Amino acid sequence: MLPFIDLQTQFKRIQFELEERVIKALRSGQYILGPEVTELENRLAEFAKVKHAVTCSSGTDALLIALMAKGVGPGDAIFTTPFTYFATAEVIALLGATPIFVDIDIGTFNIDPLALKSAILALNNCDVSNNSLPNRSLKKLRGLNPKGIITVDLFGLPADYDRINAIADQHGLFVLEDAAQGFGGEVNGRCAGTLAEVGCTSFFPAKPLGCYGDGGALFTNDDDLASLFRSIRVHGRGVDKYENVRLGVTGRLDELQAAVLIPKLSIFPDELKSRQRVAATYQKLISSSNLDVITPKVPDGLLSSWAQYSLLASDQVERQKILSKLKKAGVPTMIYYSKPLHLQKALSYLGYESGDFPFSEQVSERIFSIPMHPYLDENVISVIVEAMVH
Image (tube, rainbow, N blue to C red; front, side, top):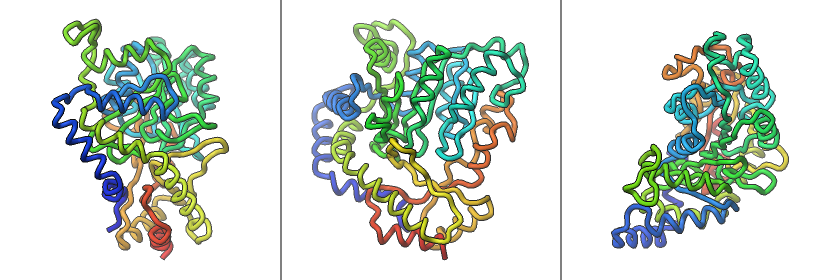
């Protein structure tokens, strides 16, 4: 069977430097916030052209640390998309704040700025007729303080930050960029993760830049926020680890994972170019076939990191037909995401119902992803497309 993501070919490419760095780290005895972490943070900041890159233990912890630094807690409302991985909303709820969902633009799968503006105004006016608002009672809505927005660069494509940042400024909200899938993408030459006041990414192995375990990072040009991130990731430490000036978490990146990421970051620009080639080849072959699917579109000025290559079938029945053909041909597939967040049991207390976010729900019934990684050659891509057709 073909791999969905080919980490073995990548490993062979960087094996010598990777093993050398890992062994060096093992022999050093410095396993927590050692020289490999420092070097990685410097290299990440240089790559992203940002002042501060602060590594941490996962993409989820990156989001959590960012929200803690912003003082998010009970009574606060954070606007985000329901069409994403659970962690995006989970961190909001873990802090006692309230996620307020906003439907997506069906063309990009990212949060719709017009729907976002409408949801913010609805909360400000306690407009219980707006589907974005949870638990539609005036008493509960009046107790919510709109505080921030978490955008998601889904499947590698950055959200519409020009419009979203402008909306946030107008209403006094912060913007947190969830670039867990988007790191390496760009908007007019600016790197995903740096497109808002704070950006977060994940180094989960399946991400465009992934380690061999869990890992993440936060990006900002704000000195004070960066200092807060570094404090919170180590139990709210002050001048040393035995002075605790605030509540924090155990959120450090392992030295061994940093040793893995440094050689991966060295080849990352080349891999991003290969991802563009793979996506273009998919687009060309699928467009010239008789497949009844919609291919992903990248708006002008944007560059996707192509964390996933996701297609929209005409309906659930057609999707299942295509998935069955691919399975028979030994081609792995995934569905991101089969159930939007507003319909997840863990968030049922918010009171959302089926039909509240029609675009997110429609996409969840039609979307599927096929293999995407830098080491797919044209012959293999042709086999994958042919398997969908026949």
